Length: 231
Length: 311
Image 1 (cartoon, rainbow over the protein chains, first blue to last red):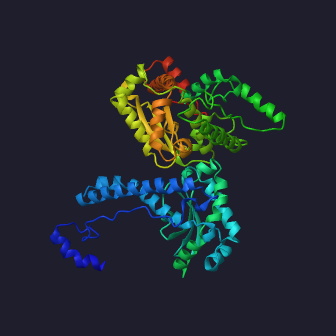
Image 2 (cartoon, chains in turn purple, blue):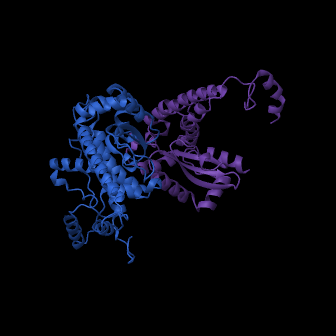
Image 3 (cartoon, helix red, strand yellow):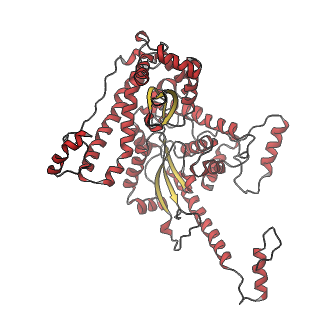
């Protein structure tokens, strides 16, 4: 807020509209593919190396490429005041930006077994799970049921409502991020149930993928996020 | 809708032993269907009777373009599961005994979809998809179909580009379609005041998940499945390559042609029906009419439950 009022005289002399939020920055931030903190084959046999490589290098990369393209076009349209194009681009930004957000979280949600993958959560998150769901097994069962029942492409999430400090299980369609289901929702764990996430290995048997992925779920990361939101 | 039914009929020539589809809507032939249910009741096995039809070619016939493995999973697992789930969801409900097309319309529920929609629509979509392809397919259509394509898209090349683009940009799971749209306004009781042949046109549409153009009252002519399971084993993430392969090597223009002829016939029939109903409505009794005519007019409208005279 202060930034805006300090710079308002500057924006006026530059002839820009006052709707410009970052009057100084003309350069657009673009995004690049984050490295995986483990090898492609490190999650086997739960998730095959072939899938991890395709998923990371092709699918996630494509979301990033298209997200950057859409942002560039959006930036241009905003500068020109081309509302029609601004609105038209929203879908592409939601798809591709969402794809980038979701997959970036996903890679952190996974860890090789020798690095703690599959180790149940302790401390406050473990306690919260037991309180809200009875047990970790019960939580997993619920998440898997939701994930298996999702029609088409999407994600199943364990999230925390940071206002109410409550754990929630949610699904989102396509690449919609969890926040589209509620502005106070923060993702702790997301499981990709798009077919590309499991098809080469599990084919049509999504429930088997859901059963096995828990062996490499990185509860440490989920606990960190939970503690940050619910400290 | 009857386009799909007649497709079914022509395919059952090849596979008569696969079992007949249930008759559509107010078909006079209700008896065989009832008999079928009676038999099942008698044997204490109550099942609805939607059956998994095999594609009109063997599972390896589309190789090397679409692998046998893909057909084994796509038809043998995915499609089969939709049919099995449909039967489970329909048995013992109001939906039992309806044609597949009717179940789709009812459960689409104007967008507020009911549980059986996914199974029903996906069962229908996959039948339609297998029949949209053939070994040695691809190439160009001819005759009336090509004329319409050139009229509505400019050229066959432009049509191909637009179809491929729709298939490539359907985000998430779904389908791309070529459909025949008998022009009608978006409101149910609106009437096109100057209908002409040029109003009935070919359109390319894409749809998410299980949705298909039947729910918009279009006549589907061609489809490509762009759910990832349709191409992942053969093409992985390279959806564009899959789509090109489909257009160049697999499309059955014969099937599309047959569906177009059906669609045109049905559209014409529907127009005649609407014309007839419009004339009946306009034919109202007035003071100037003869007594005889008055009586006939009254008879047409005496259909209310109470005894009040129509006047």
